[in-house]
Structures are given as C-alpha cells and as structure tokens.
Amino acid sequence: MTRRSCAIYAVGIICASLLVVGVGLFVGQVFRTLMHNRLKKEIVLVEGSRVFASWKSPPPPVYMEYFFFNVTNVDAFLEGSKPEVNQIGPYTYREYRYKDNVSMGENDKMVSAYNYKSFVFLREKSVGDPTVDVINTVNIPAWAVMNKLKRSFWKSSIVSMYMNSIGTGLFATHTVDEWLWGYVDPLLVRISATSPEVEPVFGLMYKKNGSHSGEFVYHTGKENYMDYGRVKTWKGESQLTFWNSNQSNSINGSDGSAFHPVLDKKERIYIFTPDLCRSIHMEFEKDVEVKGIPAYRFTPPRSVFANKEENPANEGFCITPKECLGTGLLNVSPCRKGAPVVASFPHFYLADNKYVAAIEGMSPKRQHHQTFLDLNPTTGVIVRANKRAQINILLGRMSGFPKTRTMNETVFPVMFINESVVIDDVSAARVHKLLLIATLVSHFPLIIVGLGAIMLLVLIILLFRARTQKNEVKRTVFTKPLYATSNEEDTSYSPVSDKEKDDPQNGTYISLTPKGDPQA
Image (cartoon, rainbow, N blue to C red):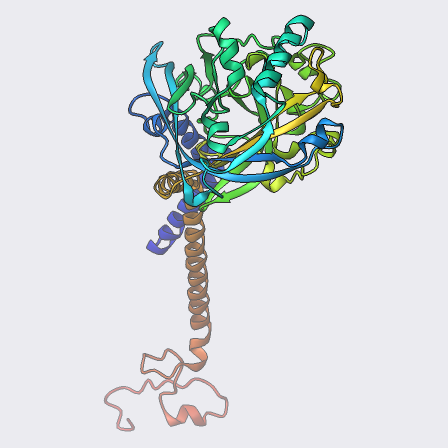
C-alpha cells in the first residue's frame, strides 16, 4: 500500500469518526446536559456560590412608583352619582433591598433571612413634591373602624356621633407624604385610648421604610435545583391562616427575588407575596430580550384573581360565601386587621368590566398595568420586572352610619404601585459571559461536526487527485509506442543490407559468407 493510500484511509477514518461522534453528541444533547447539570450545582444559595452575594444585596436599582386617584366629585358621589377620579403620579422612590441576619441550616439545605427595604425620594423622576401635593380620597381609617363595628348597631351609632363631633368624614384630604408614610388620625387617637393595640397613626406605607416583613426560610437548591429560592416558612409557619382552604393558605414558590435555573416555557412560576398575603402563579407569555440577554416573559393570567365560578380553586379566598368578589379582585381584609382593603391590578386590568365602568377615569391598558417577570431561562436571573398592584377600599351602606345610606357598593381605587427593576450593566456583562460559556460548551458537538466536514472535504480532494493521477498514467502507457520520438533503443526490425530490401520474395536474407571468401 502506497503512502498516498494510507493517507486517504486515515483521513476517511478520522472524518467518519468525527461526524459520527459529533452528530451523536448533538442529537443526544450530551454537552448541553452536562452544562445544565453544572449550573444546577453552582446556582445555589450557599456562601461562596456565584449568586449568594447578589441574592443578599441585589445590585440592580429598584424603583417604586406611587400613583394616586384624586376624587373630584365627593358630594355628588355621596348622593349616589358615579365617582370621578383623575390619576396623579408618579411619585418615585429608589428602593434599597438587602437581606440581614442570614444564617445557614440543615447542612446548607436551608437559609434564613430578613428582607429589609428602605426608600429614598427621587424628585427628578416624580411629578411633584409629596410634602406639598395633596390628594382627596377615601378616609381609610374611618372606613376601617366603620367596617369593624358594622355588626354592632349601638357601637357604630356611638362612633358615628363621635366622627361628626370631630369633623371626620368619609373622604379626607392629605399630602402624598402623609398618605404614604403616616399622619396622626383623630379618630384612631380616640380609639387607641381604650384599645392600645390600635395605632393612632395611619399611612399606606407606615413603618415600612427601613423595616422587614418577617423571617423567611428558603431552600438553597443544594438538594434539588427546582427548590432554589423556594420559601419553606414565613414567620415560622409553613401555612397561612387567613383563608378558608388549605390550598389558599399554601405558601408556594419564591419571594420573587430568586428563580431556579434551566426554566421551561411550560412550567408555572409561583411567587409568595406578603403584601397580598397569598401565593400567585405566573405563566409564559412570550420571548423577549433585555440588553442582549434572551428571556422568557411570565405574567399572572386572569385565573389568578378569577371568581370561584370561573376558577373553583379560588373559593378559599372568599371571606364568606356572601362576601366573594368578582373576577380581578382579592379581598385582603383578613390580613389587614379587618380593614376593607381590596387588591387588584391597576385600573382593574383583567377584572370584570363592571368595576371599570363603575369609576369614571379608569382605563386599563396592558402596556402600563400588566405585572410581568422577564427571566433568563438558562440562569433563572431576573433581567427585568414590573410588579403592579392597586389598593382599593370596599365602600357601601353600613348600619349605624347615616352618611352611607345613599351609597352604592363600590370598589373604590385609592392608589396603585409600580415596582420595577432592570438588570444593571455589570450584572448583564456577567450573565453574557456565563451564557457565552454555556453556548460554547453546549455547541461543542457542532465544532466536532465542523471538523468532520473539513476532513470530508480533504478526503474528497485526495480522492479526486488520486483518480486524476491514475488516469494520466494509463494514458501515457497506451499512447507512447505510436508517438515516441525519443532516443531510447528501438526494438523494431531493420534490414541489414540493401539486398534484403530488393529481395523480390520479400524473404529474409542473412549473409553466411565465410571470412576468407573473396566475394565478401
């Protein structure tokens, strides 16, 4: 076997091996699986891991925007007319988050922490000064007290008279700063004198600046990557006690700050939020991209706040069978000390149309009022998020309070929030680097297939050249006797004398004359 033949055989074997191995690895997703397994082991809430520091102190800036609904026809509404409101905002605050008192447990399978939040006002991102701008809206402390006493005619009558004596109405006007961070309410001051558990100060965000919402215990993901960041207990309890079914009281999912890697479009994302006193789920909506990072957008579907007829699983969130609101609303009074607070999406987005139609000034729009999470599916990192929720007060006739006798039952909007975050450039660069490594490793079989294709091309070239040279050799062998003009020895017959040429018999003449013959 020639050296050229050996080279062809070697190239052929290498080519076939590369193609078979490369295609096999690609079809079997071997390297992709290896990379995902590595991510599952590295993305855990354990000291020294890739994500632990950013989990404790998230680097991307979080902004909290507050929008208020200012009532413009209070007197007409109290007489039975449709309320009219206009939206004022945003009043924007930079939200600083960090986890404190972090401690590991159960052989690094669990981690406990307190989630602290603090807020700093940003004038350049706001429509006005919260200490100056005033909002006229529902007198929430008064309605909370009235709702607490509505089943006792005598107590409600006494409180009604006291409210009249101090000039407390069903609506009130305060600055944005007072509505958010607190003001001394005269009615609460009077009640707190006999009921010390009642705070004399009211504010929608009262005592929430620089505070925490209780101790959380999380799964680290060390045992199972699907449990990464999942809440095990809140305030020492694995079940809530606010609602009327075990399913409704379940604490499911994370707290919204961490999600497991290797996400699937078909799965549901569960989030437990203390503000709503319940867990909600989100489903895949579409593919998006943020700062060049691919992401899956997850949003809460209509079924999350659907009524019990539309979604029977939500029956446990009804206060009583008669106090069950329609689709798009959640009565959170059980975890708001009995205050008639109702949660919804802004402008009653995804709610029954009757709630939108009942208030002049409501205009739900998906772009501005949808809650969503954009998660990178490989790492589970949040690249963008908007948490939007609206605070409403349930108004209606109450026995013992004459001022309410002409009022129709109304879910009245007070304020909505937009808590937003977009991944910062430094964190985005880290994610890009990690995704690049994951892509290269996952596509390594394609590199092997590419090398196999190159070797196949080399094999084709070698075979073509070998065939060409073989054809040239054959052509030379068969054509040389006809056209040879070289000086090489000619083996054809030549006559030895002229006599041979003249032989009429065309015979062969060979001279045998002896040396001594004189005729020679």
